[in-house]
Image (cartoon, rainbow, N blue to C red; front, side, top):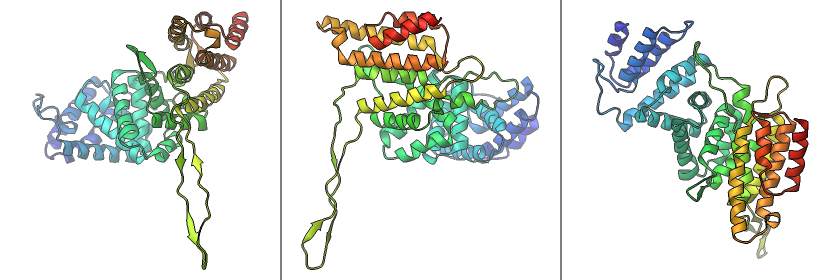
Length: 402
């Protein structure tokens, strides 16, 4: 085993990192399960030759990689992952590089790698990142940090690449599904009286993804990750519960008349012989969907996804009843403020829109066998919500059926 390290020390960076990835694959792949000794050697190789975190005696290096070296390493990783034809091998090496990660330096490199893979629509890399998100947990601190970096790069700094982003739902659906799950953890939460809402172009892309592909939200569950032998697969959590939260709370949080902007299309003109300039195209006004309208479209996409989430065998896995029940206190807080202002709950349009969407989502989810967990507790939580005719009918019907 010492020969591996000795041979790698003949190379300077970045060649040593490229050679190290092949040695890591040899150590971890092709066995029933690698021994603890093989795992330890692989971790040492990764630390010393890939990320340059330790020296030959195992001591910590202070400097780490320079920005140029980070880019060189990311290019080497992209090439390796793209050339790897076996999904299990690729995920084994990828998780050994970034799994169980506490290092902010490695997370920074992974975030740049993921962002570049999104830019380049690199399916092999994105699928590996999707598996990483799932194994780390889409709501874990590391996953949320990575997703925030991708959002910053592609939905704040660069807003002109929506066409390429929308195509990812077809090329890397497992990544997109886990990405949306993490995104729903980041937004639409009322923290200290301020609502953290998703940027509009992120909402537009997610709406396009979900609306155009009803099976997308289930894709991480329908395509189990190819993991190394002996590893414990983490259950894939669909983004459906989080998206139901978004759509239900949108009427309470979003101004329905916001952003009704008319964008005039320039008039095109031609000049015919012996004639004055004549307009051949009339001015057309294009009204982009407002945020409120996007949430309506997303809500319809979620309902279609819930119908597609029906399982022909086995228990439901699409939506956790407890996650749906967590809507109740948020809606009650809004209702309490309406009453404080002297308003009537039954005539508050925003509240009634919210309750209608909750009722529609719960009905479609229950009717299609998508909900797992304690359904009785869910119905009891919904029963505490303000009066809404549709919701009352749904609660009563399903309470009788239990």
